Image (cartoon, rainbow, N blue to C red; front, side, top):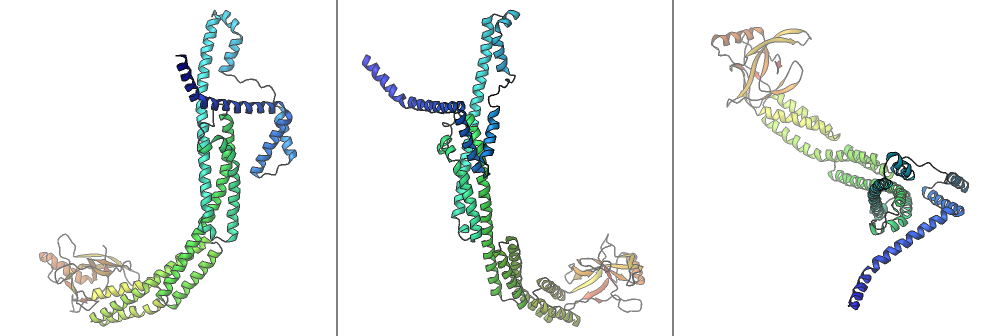
Length: 497
């Protein structure tokens, strides 16, 4: 029986050995640290040496040139009032302590038994201690999170630094830019290396829950602040290096784009003027990139891309203009239509030499409109629909700039199938051409009054044809005649009233 109990106890002891030894090691380390701290605090010489060594290491990290005299002066000022008595601040702890000292007088004055008074004070003190422990636990966990976040930041920065130094852009970079990145690498590694001991002690393998405890979290909190400063300094160096790498990548990309664009232009074989312009843009762009002027290089890339687009459009425009002009010559019966089309087509030759795409496209549009109009056949009639005016009178500005009374017949173009045909009309009031379905033709007053009487007679305008436009013509042939039997002139049109 006794043997069985002994074996069970032995098993329990063996199971708890590791935990007990670990706890004893923690206590031994804490005791050693506390002993060293006490010895240092009690020995002014050791304390001054400790402070001087700490200040010297800080000055090395920050890069500040601090002399021994300045360090000694700072330590002297720090130690001058180190052991001065400071009056405790008012609070619940101070109040309870004073009450305990004065317990007999309070008990007699208020008739409270000393035992009850001590019990109440003990409860209050216990509540304070419980609250204090909760607050301490929360603070400890907060410090643990700060330490682990700092560890992750450090690991991220180390990864970014490795990517920079192993990048193809860094390998292809000019030596002067490489030296700048190398300096940033050395500085950032220096800052990060200083934090190694801190993380090794308080965040091994990225976890701080065991290394940070209630006996050291306050000290760790102070140290992690300094560590964060070092990490921020390293990040600034890495940010600077990444900007240089990014610029290098953009320069390489822009140069590649310039090479590709000029190759396209050369293969398209545009006119001399456009080719020379493209070559100049390419050469200047390359020169600016070699000077590390990315903004200007990108601008020349954009201009060269436009030159490439123009070079692509020119053959298509030439083909289109040739086709439309040939069609116009086949359809046109009216000589003025032929002359107008020939003038537009001939004016395109210097535009091709100058690579003036905008005006070439404008010429193509005008030729297409002529071609389309030549193929149309319609009759221009006075509008006679209900609730639509057949004529209006209004003032207009004549060719001499004077205001005069004008009379207009409202007309529309109708094809052989009875469909309304939109027509391009030049508005004499603003000089703008519009494609409209109805417009006003200015006529003499006698014609206006004659049409007015015709409509008022029975609501129908018998003489409703104003003009005709046969196929092969771009000019309307006015059919409506004046009192002398002569066709009316084209006096002017309006598109709004």
